[in-house]
Image 1 (cartoon, rainbow, N blue to C red):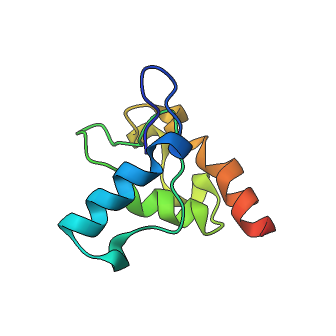
Image 2 (image 1 turned 90 degrees about the vertical axis):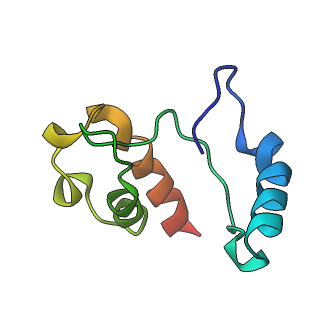
Length: 90
């Protein structure tokens, strides 16, 4: 989830998100956790980079997953490295 303009966090947004997913899709689509990031990684054409973000969260190095030259905002993947370390600690 992308941070809102007022610094909205996932804690205050979890219930509406899970309810919307459960109602529109099914309970199996509700994620175990919801985390905010400053910006959603996108390539220069505007497509979301979901697979590279997932690979980083699974432990891959950002430099091995995607070239920063292809990103609209090169720093957009920086928030995923600490999240991956936090996930691996659990």
